[in-house]
Length: 453
Image 1 (tube, helix red, strand yellow):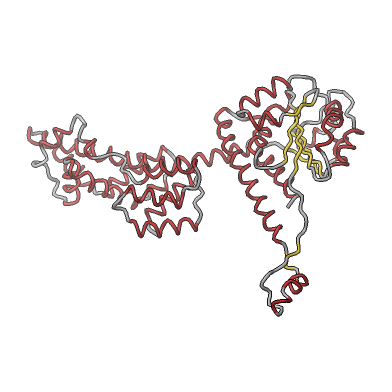
Image 2: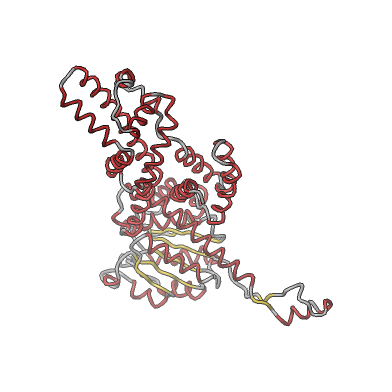
């Protein structure tokens, strides 16, 4: 595969366009037919292969223009205050090094812009600029590129002119200095462009992974923004994973007896295959969230996860409570997340925690949403504020459900202390675990969906 195409596909993947190996092969075949001469035709052809949705098309357009365009032109560099000095002395200043003199010609004439960009592209590939990870590496890689281009000869000539202390030497020194500045700015622009393509996305992915593992109660504002993107990707990944698993299950195993009977009219040649199918329930989730102050930070991320899952899980009901239980599914399905979250906290949060009343409300008002196909997912610390936990009602709910999974934001060492009822609720649940981070949340929902695989 052409190295330029390989780098482009890598940039696309870092930007969030999931180009598969098969699509990369198709893109290589398209590029072999189209070539680089007609840039617009190449862009349109690769877009057909690599960009599959409107969102991916927007990312594709931005990455293509950034990747296949030079970060700056020599003509733009010639607009600098020193350009006239450099150009006027162009015929007088020579370093004696053919490579550097050729660069000076390209840097001082707009007609050399394309060749200068080609030279910088080659130097960037030689020093591995695409491996940049941090913005602080920009000066280092820029210097490495200039060294690859042979700028040492130019700097040697510049030092020599500066030491001569003659009017003619000063003129030549100013011209050499201006030419070096043009080359330095070109090198820095190239490195900054590659950092935007490769370094910045990689750094952002690293920071997102850190945020995903960080305790939910210790999130900073930048982490909040990263988590919204990360949670959306998690929900999409979970939905795709379990949809694919269900498709594999639906195919089943070959039923030999039925196959032979079906193909009796073909002398037993199995033209039509019959399969054994095992009935699998579709995922049906009922989520109950404590939105009192003690778990508010955790609830935000669970609701963010549920917000992303709505529309991907066919049957999902979400309830929130602090004292009285309320169905918030419609808000999560129809409102932007920030508005839905504000409405939930305003209308449901703020009251004294009462788990017993929540189970009574769920039993009396929404019992029809729980049946043997339902997984009930509870998020809360199990602290019922010295009220009756209504274990009898909770037991009735768990008996009707397929599974009951409780995610507690408190560590197990605190279960049962003070007004915590976790040790009393735990025997009635299918699974109880400590949920401290977004990765814990993803794993718990993944396990809940696996029950339907």
